[in-house]
Image 1 (cartoon, one colour):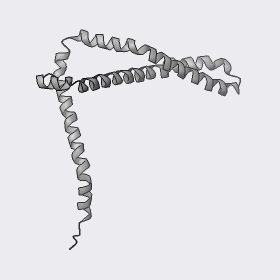
Image 2 (cartoon, one colour):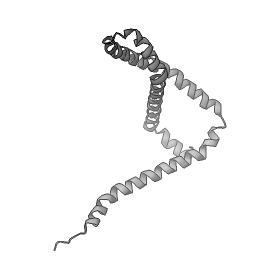
Image 3 (cartoon, helix red, strand yellow):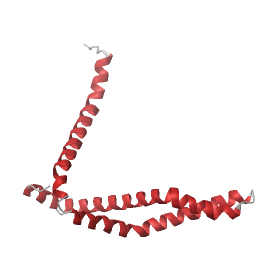
Image 4 (cartoon, rainbow, N blue to C red):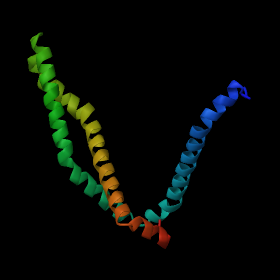
Amino acid sequence: MKTIRHASHVVLVKLGGPLARGGQVTSEFMALVFDFLRSAPAALKSPGVIIERFFALIVSSWFLVAITTFATGAALALQFGQGMSRFGGKLYVPNIVAFAIIRALGPVFACLMVAARSGGGVAAELGSMKVTQQIDALKALGAN
C-alpha cells in the first residue's frame, strides 16, 4: 500500500538535514567566538608579542604588495594611454595612474595582499601542527 504524503512533509524532510547542519555550524561558531572573548584579556596582557607579530607580517608582505601594485599600475597606464591617445590626452596618463594607485587602489591591494599572506601562513602553520599532532597535545594539556 502506497502512502500519500502531504507536500509540506516532503519539504520538511528535504530541509531537515541542511537546517540541522546549519545549526551545528552556527553553534560551533558561537563557541569559537565565546572562547575568543574569554581568552582575549589574557592575550592583551602581553601586547609586545602582538605588536611584534603584526610588524613581522607587514614587513614580510611589502614586496608582494609592491609587485602587485606595480603590475596594476602598468596595466592602468597601458589602458588609459590607449584610451587617452584618441583625444590627445596622453599627457594626463601619469597623473591619472598615480592618483588611482595612491588614493584608491593602493590601500585596497595592500590590505588584500597582507590578508592573503597572513591567512596562508596561518593555514600552513595549523596544517603543520595538525600533521605533527601538536594540536592534539595542546588539547590534552587543556591549553587554549
